[in-house]
Image (cartoon, rainbow, N blue to C red; front, side, top):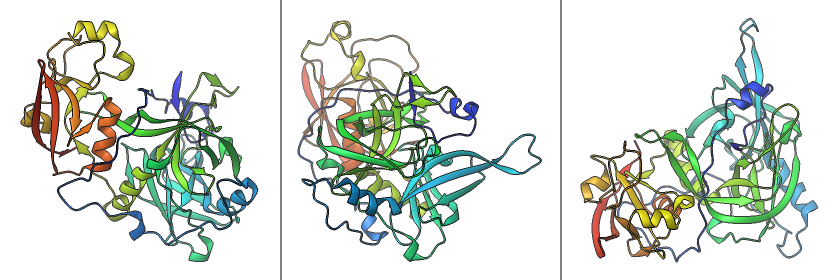
Length: 398
């Protein structure tokens, strides 16, 4: 069974209600980045967070004791409260997760699903300080939330952010969080894969969930309560935010348990999304308005049914949302978006702005990291044996 690493609920019922499905396409080697054209880039976290460095740590030495001592003060426990039936309108603790400090202004990053439905939020620091927090903004697509606490700057240890584009399979990583409410727990492992895809917490117009791309897979132990905590490299830099696990193991209370397959939102997405959440409370994702075959369904039988050769590489367009950016640009889907079954005749997207694409995750990754709403891009497709370039204006996810 596949499910999110949900915040540690105080009842098994609340945890079970938050389960969801994860879709995993194969990862591919990244191509050199292409500089985006169009509107100015979105703000970066450097504009909203104070400089933070970790001295005395080398990747080669891997001094985990020193790393923990320096990082743990910036990792917080998040407790959510809500009114429970029969509690006489008294707010009770209903869930627990993890977050981490990103600046000395009191901004804390966590998962959206950690704070979803909370009527009150408490942030507990390793120093023993407790503070109430407000939600500045949430993003269902990346499953991110930004909280704000009103505490003095000397109580805030901001964690340095790394570059998830530099993350490599086999790299050693650690996670710090509050699994099952055990605050300040540290686990270690490696990066198992990059370029995974998870379902968004938000549905597209056709009812299927949007996709979140560039997800980091790790075998560092992640369990309920780790949600929203940092995944770090051995330099002490945050390279991801722990979000989900894939598991078939459960505790006696019904909680999902780590099976060595965990997933983290890459830090470069956080660098884009968080400043917008702080400034406006939301983030607008680039949008094309297409659906495609998932990588795990693109087998020989499928390729034969849609009249494509066995060495096909690209994103097969199963449908195009009427009136969306792709529709206006002239992309062709294999059928209507509400149809069942699989048909031939859809475009095969092979590149955007000259950058080759092999999987749907490549497409999502490029859109999120290299394009913005309103930007004009060139989509290259194979159509009936011919290569066709189409000019498209990127829209906003509805």
